[in-house]
Length: 333
Image (cartoon, rainbow, N blue to C red; front, side):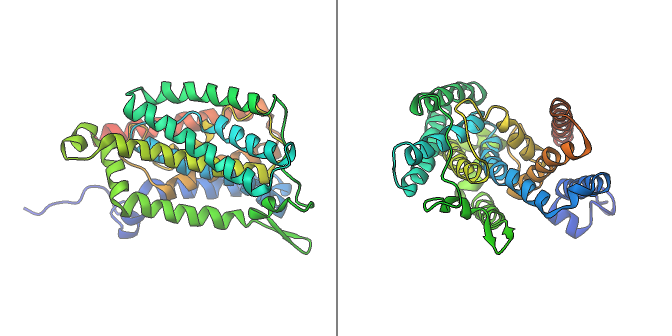
């Protein structure tokens, strides 16, 4: 008796199997969204709109790539949205209010993310706390620290037209009268690097194994606590990078900001195929999911959808993404 392949002609196609059905579906949805907004609004077709979409994408992509590692272990980091604001505010405050060199502000921003990622990792891996509750608590702590460190004042990083405003050119450069999205290059390079880390290294394989079956990984000799902590450290460092991306694209940041951004990043990862229960996920899928979130955030105002309704629509999209993840896990069970 011959074995019959499961699935259909589409899912059994070698290219589809190599790329993944969900990534292809997400890519098609992204293309359809862009076509829809272009058809509904001529203003959406402008080059300035592309730059606006990318401004949202940079920081969401960094957050999404970082939190993907936490999600794959079966955890989550809810502090990334508030943390992104806090770290960038502290770094910017040192530059604009205390006269520190720009490089100091950059290193402090990245360092804050690294430290908080380590703290989250220690609480979850060594302390045994549930990731949801642990990072919810550190989210509130981070928000308070940002307000204390800056005396509750809004902070603006140096503008692009001043001597020490070169940080804004890291993500967007102007040649003549045209602005070029240099940040897209950094997103692609980091996506490649993190994909290699996740799929081609022992650390990445162990992180996936922890999410698939934590006890089995421990019995196989994996130091679960160390690799769990590594996932949160990566997430913290990427949150610091997201802070730099946000500060380069937008004018000012308030200590109370950042709330809810973590949901867009986590939602992007889930839309891209990362499982909330852990054990599976990809950086490429997260990037596609994040682009969908960015296109929605940018495109909905162009068709006259007010801010409150935008949140409802994005919330419904996330519900669908979570439901698809639940169905996928049931099918694999």
